[in-house]
Image (tube, rainbow, N blue to C red; front, side, top):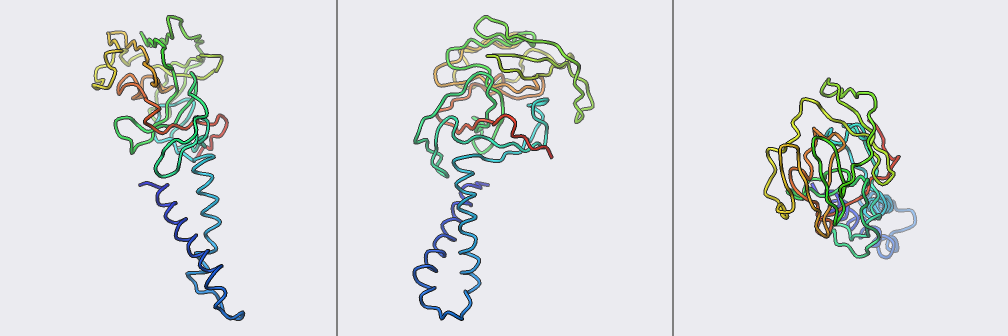
Length: 254
């Protein structure tokens, strides 16, 4: 369901009613006459719909976490607000960028259109930016030949699965976040798709090594053994997909 399109249609209808009432209908009614119900509701809803439309299209957008791929950072059912303008200003509904603002950086958490099915929103962390050589071997992350700083902390209980996972704190680019690994999950990727630029990725028994081409990003979930991400479906291309940055600290848990 295209909520932005529905909201835009409601805005047009309520706005037309409001304009017609202000400039036409109100001048024809006697002072003691009540507004017709459709005028009363349409005109009164217009400013509310306008505010919601502007906020959701250009400022922030609510998003509900549908899966456990970002545990322990984000839990299933969490509501978050994503920043709509960090990476650029887009026209609503048609999703066309009109102003370039910034580029994703390593460590950013992004909501984006799933490359294999643009009707779906995905949320992952940016691990590799254009030009990076990303290696995820034996469940350890290396960027451009340098292992990402990692520290082991207490195990994490995944309540949905009733299972303890090893928990680490990673610190790429000075941004700390937690990740999870399962000892019994294999390191190799057995069902990667035939995605564009797959020739830039090497799969082996230890995992995957990818060189990120221009305009693309390597995305991973923090719940490393329970996330379908760039290791499986390939590299995210920001130029052809909508991307919004998760605003740190704006999580609303259910």
